[in-house]
Image 1: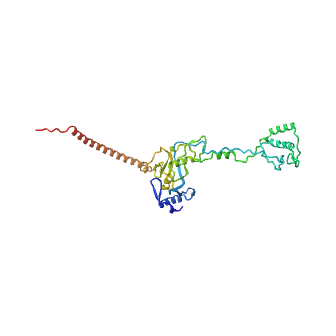
Image 2 (image 1 turned 60 degrees about the vertical axis):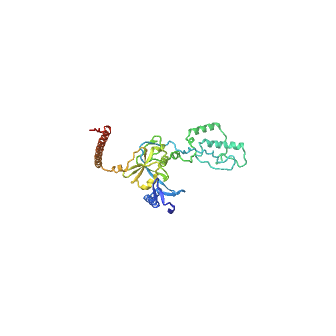
Image 3 (image 1 turned 90 degrees about the vertical axis):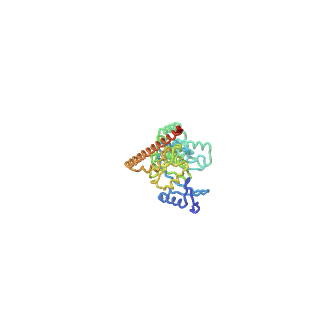
Length: 346
């Protein structure tokens, strides 16, 4: 997109605006930081209303403490695989005289009984429906048709039932059962965790990163729903919230109207400066004033706490003295009104 066509002022979330030069500076800095990972670069487009929309991947870390529940079934189920029923293979020499010849291959029959049935029914079909042409033989070896012998047939069937050859199945040209099951249950994993019945309820490891593709128009709730849908989580999105945790220790909760991608762009792409965590809704925030003491040593913190207690005691004493003075003054005024002075005449 041509840079000149962009408006001179670009809205970067609610109540914030960037100039065109500032926007391109932030975008170029972001993409240069991730120059070795081109798939994570941000891109922008301009809508019909003139709004600049940024799209790309947002890195979110897991910080939930309550267990999450994975869906038992996906929204879009792949129908179960059904083995195709192949038509009965024709005999090596067609008894119908259609001129189609071919050779039978091992494994094309359910069992070896079909071979004998096809061979023995061929002369009957030819006798009932005589067709002009060359004589039909039993097999491709030009062996003449044989007559049925009941005793021999029983012995032959008994022998086949007792042999391992009856276990021969039709060749399956499709995918194996393990591959089909793997494809049916395929979904994204959280730190390598896929759904199974024993661990369908679990808590992700704290700080485990994941990526979700969003746009700058998406609000906090929409980003949370996108993340839950990615991993097939059935928890209510209202149970979670997004928090910006800075290097200083400040923890700020994003409101429902905030746009997380703009927060990431304004803070820069480095996770060392700021990370976005998905945490429980009732997680406490940490202000910047409190966060500045988190990285200090214990001895220094104890001295700071002692100093604060001294200041607190001084403030309490000052309030008590002021209260006593005001109480004394008000008491004197009330006494004058209740008991006015009596004037006596001489």
